[in-house]
Figure 1 (cartoon, helix red, strand yellow):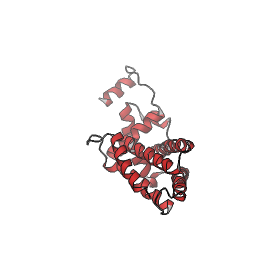
Figure 2 (spheres, one colour):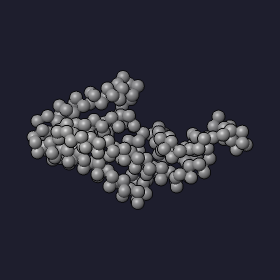
Figure 3 (cartoon, one colour):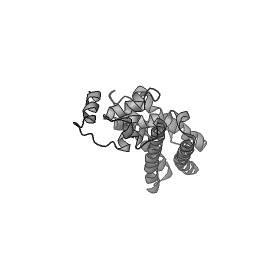
Figure 4 (cartoon, one colour):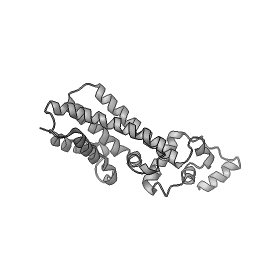
Length: 204
């Protein structure tokens, strides 16, 4: 069907809407998750829109560029959520819990972007990887800062903040590997139940 549409478009019988960069990132992330990054070709992504390679290369240099942009978008969104939470100026423990809730919700609701964020680092061009790593560190530092403040007030277990944050975020990240939205829990229900557990773990 896609091939027929492309032939008709070339013959001038079908009008294809321009492909937007954000749409490409959404589609590519989904394809990377379902069929694998290495198995997904630029032509596969183009075919899914019924367009030629040129429509993609107008926005992206290659598949690695798409991978980099997915990473940057995911981290940018997470950072925006985290910055908003910290700006609310709530008690340190409540800030930490809100950060964890936000992160967990993102993982549950955007598994394709999270998978791309956590995998394939070796495929990201060096110049992009340095920028992405800087963004990741900035994001993690927000959590560490919140844990440090809560720890100083004896609101959370007295363990190393970097260790605690790595374990907490790591546990949340793994959700994308096993969570099935059709398995009985909606993303919101998953977040609520997970937060009950995290709240209990973070009591002094």
